[in-house]
Length: 449
Image (cartoon, rainbow, N blue to C red; front, top):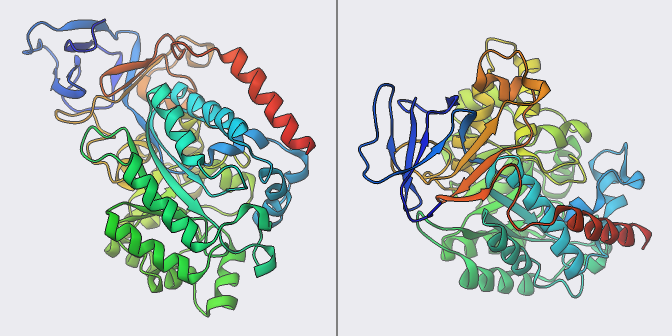
């Protein structure tokens, strides 16, 4: 099908949109028309894609991940540990990352995300052993090859074990090198505008892995370069105690002191905020990436999503790293978030549509892309189409609810900017068995040391 021609995604089984019962017309990378019940497209010369067997969603948006961790899934040395001992077990393994193993880890993560209906993903890469200085450039190349939108964050750590931090000396860098590379990456790769496919953000790993100087300098650099900021915050009670001991304040107070409490910033996890802190987050326009699977596996706690939304905080979803999930499937993350928050708040407070909203419009706000995450005229033509032809869906009544309740996990078609990047449940040109073979070999080599 000619990608330059207008396409009518016709008569879907169901669609997460208002006034688009007969589907949407996409052209030039945008949604140009929503076709209501009983209507025909007004756009001339449209090609037709028959979506009568599909449920159509806005492309899902992943707001927190660590791609390289696909190389350390279900690693015995790190299993059944809480966050800090989990990190101590994994940092020596991650220190063995090479450009070749990273490229494979990134390819696996991005491919798994695409196949789950994710059209835009972030990544938080903060491990830079010698020889891996161009880690983010490697990620950009994979993203361009696969056709997924990305907001790649230039992570950083400059407090190692000798400074009282957690990571080994071999994976941290000094402040000047970190800031210089952040500026280089923005200059080289960051695209602006509604059609942007690659963007860069700045992202110190966490308050317990960087100096106050680097936190403040990063905020200043992001302001000068007009890019977003990201970090982990309020993930565990250990972190809160650390901040009290080191800085004499709670994590959000420290964040504000460093110049981070603003609308540029989105935070991963956000489990341990009190009611007043939630109001401060909302006033600042700072958003939260809820990582349901990771928080359950590490037993970190549960993000108080409903209280946050009632306070005015916008919530998105993130799969988090594949060493604490241990997958990169955003559709499964939607279901996990739905179940976790439903169990916490009850059937009247959380519906399947809430979970889908977190993964679409909420996540779009986290990444600062209001043109994403919604099916409406003028929005980007980023779509995920799911079939209900598996045993898990047999007997279902509401097609949209079935995606969440019955456990959809693989999209049949995925469109990014008007281009099909997943067709018949596969990524064109990707040899999955070969990727698995090479990725598994790289992972085994890292595990063995």
